[in-house]
Amino acid sequence: ILQIRPKTGLSAGTHTETVTFTADNGISESFEVSFTVNSVPSNSTTPEKLDTSIDVLINGKVESFGKAITTNIAGQTVTTVILDQDKLIERIADEGLSTVVTIQVNGNSDKIKVDLNGQMVKLMIDNLTILALHTDKATYTLPIDQIDLDFVSEQIGKSINLLDITFQVEISLPTADMIKIVENAAKIGNFTIVSPTINFTVKAVYGDVIVDVSAFKDYVVRTIAIPEGVDPNKITTGVVVEMDGTVRHVPTQIIQVDKTYHAKISSLTNSMYTVVWNPIIFSDVDKHWAEEAANDMGSRMVINRVGTDSFNPNQNITRAEFAEIIVRGLGLKLENSVTPFTDVRQSEWYSSSINTAYLYQLISGYEDGTFRPNDLITREQAMYIIAKAMEITGLKEKLLTQPAGEWISSFEDAASASQWTKESIADAVQAGIIIGRPNELLAPKAYLTRAEVAVMIQRLLKKSDLV
Image 1: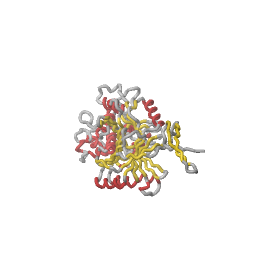
Image 2: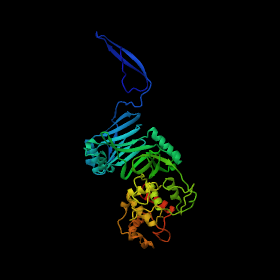
Image 3: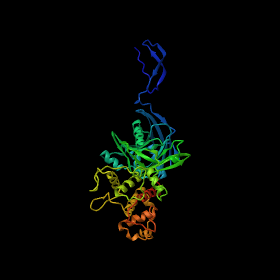
Image 4: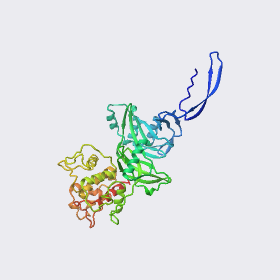
């Protein structure tokens, strides 16, 4: 009986192999064998393939110290980029702080990732290095100091050698199950998906332990290429689609690079992103002074309708409503932890928004431990929170350092503002987010209207270069 085992990694179809058989008497005989491969199992792995054409740029200069290995894992094509550690260290040392390491990977891989060991990451953190991963479908620009090594060590649970940790920065297409979640979310939310859905992740791998590095202290930029033929004027915003199907706005700009449009998305977390068309025209803001801001914030899923298609621009809003709107505007991931306030029950619709605003230090509540969610919010309270949001967006650090009085003294009623809010009001005025009510009034004790909050949030995002 002669058994012939074809080589592995064959594609489906008919193949012919030459087989040579040598008998005990030394006589050899060669003959051809034809056979058919009907299908390739989805979990098969093709031989590793070295792609020496991978581009690595250091501050725009092409270098040759990277390789790309492509494999097939569970039916997905995965391209892994590996950098030469010694050469990377040498080039970063030569270039100094804020070196940009750009990796361009072309092709149709389902997942493209860069592997860095912990020692390389520590070096890049110390030198404020930026890693820019470019693919045909998306880009991911990650300042490496956004990776919290202390957090990773805490999650692993013991002191470890940095060389033993592999950090993986990934851009990937969603699985079939994830695509279904996105499509169902679009159907429920009545919006149109206009770009591929892309998953951006950073993982720390130590043996069998995988730590998801999903939260950052500053906004991190990723872009998604808009398919040819899509009208850039029919793009509303980028959104995150969570695994439970919930959708949230993330600050998004539409930019053009080499005749191709891209959605530039800024976010404080990693997740699954797509770009949508969700036009909202409120019926009761036609020719209103806040018409453009109201429709823009509505289309971006920051402010909801009242009833079927109304905005109610002159309606005052509560402290809970303002917390929800500021959290949505900044694109923050909702936190469902135990509430820090005695009068905010976890079962209430606003508890997650209030918890999230508290976590990001946007709000602090009252001295008696309450938040008073159903109280109407005053303009000075809102301006205080806006100034806190300016710290998150990086807008505050761009302001001039001058006494608060120099910015608010021109308002007739500046003296009526509470002392604890004056510096925040001055920051909001200097940034151009607050210009006052008619007749040169700040109206700090007046209640905030829905029209005013729409304009304030839009200005915050525009002045911060997020939309």
